[in-house]
Length: 204
Image (tube, rainbow, N blue to C red; front, side, top):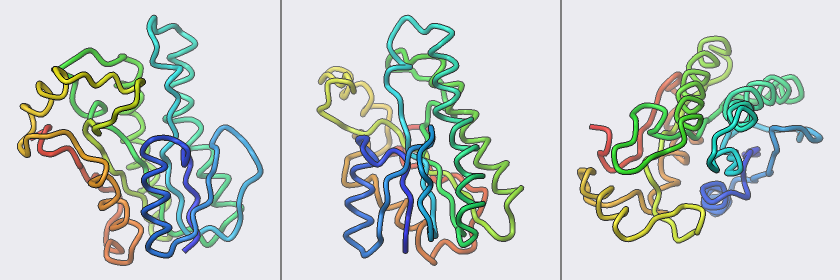
């Protein structure tokens, strides 16, 4: 299968690209903010991020930038990709639990939370509008453990966050790809408009 992965160079994107390629898929990086569109694509995955929008203070430009990253660009890119690739049958959004539940362990930029909620809703709207030819689903991740400086995951934060999950830990990198591989596969052919939450039980 030929898959376009928007955000393939990000933390989660790199994990997904590696895991999908290991099971035989061809993964083509894509940028939703505009470039030449790939062709002969079967599946589109939206996983783009823009950390620059989440640096305090949260200005009007950062509100607009985050909305573009999470909502407008994915919508525009989806429509353009479908026009270029009439064979697309599967679209997957990668989103965050902070679009469903306000944070309780530490402060998360408000523009991120609101735009993630809109992104999740966008996936449902597209599922309705593109049915029955194209399936659209959304994988919603809890906090994924990472040593990246931008993740700001000190030991104290990890302990407090993990204590709020049923499994007792943050989502581990090797737990990231499973739900996406399922949605890419024919095993999920009866699903559209759904949310799969991978958060260790944080939102229960």
